[in-house]
Amino acid sequence: MALRRPALAAAFALVSFAAATVFAQNADLSPGPKEGSSYRFGLSERLEIRTMSKSLPGGSQLHVMQSDVLMRVKSLPAEPEGPVYEVTFDRVKFVSQHPTAKRNPAFDTGAPADEAAGNELAPVLLPLLNKPIRVSLDTSGRLREVRTPDQSLIPDVDFAGIGRQFFMPEWIGPRLLPVVSMGTAETAAAVGTRWSIPSESPVLFGVDQPMNISTEFVVREIQPGQIARVELSGTATLQPQRSGDPVSAKLDSLAVTGEAVWDLQSRIMGQILATTTWAVQTSPGENLEVRTENIRRLHVARLQD
Image (cartoon, rainbow, N blue to C red; front, side, top):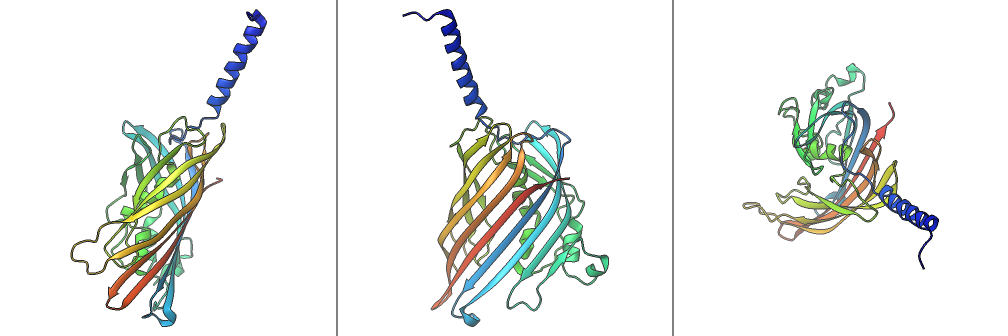
């Protein structure tokens, strides 16, 4: 039976509405705030390293480091290769606590000037303030280049051992990437869309055998025109042992959990809560086993002006 004209029009309208509804459920996850727009962010990172060995007093020790950074992110004119941002740090706090350390360094750049005198972290952290860091992405939303005012952004001062890695220039870029990008250029993501970002961890367990981590992302919820919620997970492998290193490591376990909230209106991060845990076994000597259990907690949040 042929449809009457009103019924045909109604059917066409229904199909059009359904198509528009499906389209509205797609999310633009590509980075791209309006040129000149500026945002404030807080980035907090806590690293706990528990080392277990019969050679240690009590059999184990816990080293805790935490950094807290307040920053401003400004969107610059995009280049053909991808988006560009200028990042400046307004305030930096760092603390390291180690049970066998002669001192536990701590400093807050927002502290009174008299507290900076004689503090070993002051000449390390104060130069970070108000220095424009240029962060460039490629067209896929991945990190392309990071330019600091100079290559010696941080003085060659050793503090808290591996604590220097929190602010070394080569590590600043990977820490800033989650602020400005989801690591994808997907413009029509749907619930269930997946992608991954590879990264390399610093050497935290005393061997020259870095860890390759693949962070997996999957879209779990889309609120059209507002936010997209993305679930985080991950896998990892250790790189082959470097020649000349007498100690090798074995990765016992790794888990990545977390959630990212992407702002669909501003096309920049709203918030990330992520936890990475991993355990590594090493044999630095005959009849000596050392196990390290690591927990890294990351919190990125956009702040109100």
